[in-house]
Length: 474
Image 1 (cartoon, helix red, strand yellow):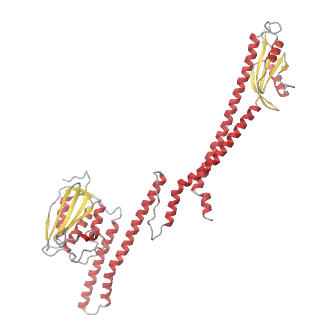
Image 2 (cartoon, rainbow, N blue to C red):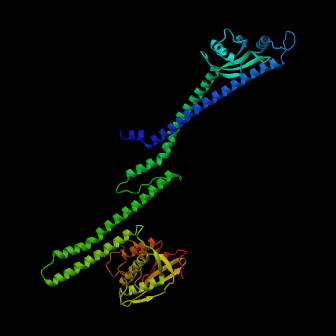
Image 3 (cartoon, rainbow, N blue to C red):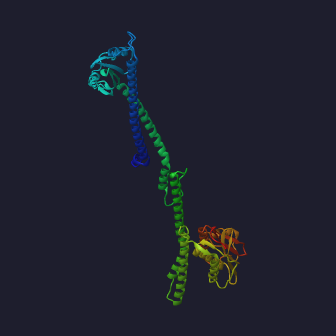
């Protein structure tokens, strides 16, 4: 419990959620502030339009209006203009109309006593005698005004002022912003919950990866992560599974190496120990014992070299490919094979002319193992043939002998480690690694080993290596 709580509070899922909440909160605050400023700007613009419309109506009355008492133009009667306009026009909601005549406040549309803050501001505006627009701070809140002077015969006789209280509009704006903020908060909470669930689903493969890594022990490397999709986390899961595959193969090779070494080294060690324990003082007996011990040590050294070759076959640097002339390689292999047993009837079936991309030393090792295998399963005077050819985009190198052949039931098994042919074919007590090495070298080249044999009719082993299209074959 004490370990899981910090992981929940400070794990990747919590950090993702925290980053999401911080980002969403920041964007919500910014958008809310921007929304309020936009609504206030629109409200102020609407107020200015209303004020301008009211002043425009007053100007039309001054220019084109007539006195309803006698039907004639006002002819500079400012008092009559103010009276007629205030009688005919009803100001809009939150609007008030004020008039100034000969430097003194005259009448207004305000019910009751006019706002003293507005009257004081008007007294300050009267001496200017020019049109003006602005905002007045009053006890009841800010008031927007537009003042238009009334001139008669070039002299300012008065002023017409229309005002509109801004507080009601701003209260509406604030209410709208509060509603928007409440909705944004609800959306934030809902989105945070969804983000927590989504983050859990997105991070589920990572948790599975951690659980799998913790469950892997020295004895079990078979567990894998169930991967779906093609995103970055899925690629991580596939890479982790591929790593487990490599580790499993590496551990399997290691276990096989230890098991094989323990199995095969036990016999020569027992032989050496037994002869050394029974070693006497007779010089001839000592020479025989030393020769036997040396032979067993040589066999152990060859066995260890073969095991190391099989272990290295799983590594990426097992091969060092280069361009190889197959005709020259075939002749070289034939010459080396004859040195294994001069009493065999060696021959060359065919020599392919061309080049391929391969590891020359590893191919030589594989073919020499096949030649040594042929020697071990034939007698003096028996025929052994080598050859090479290009066919169907592949290079083929074979060793053919006239020995007892390989039974059909054993033709797959003999390529396994420590597998030996039956007594009818086997003439030596090798460790049974030669053909396994041949197959490992062929498969490292992307190829294979083929066997064609019937009991009593000899055997033909062929190393098949694919040839690239750009490799010239002839």
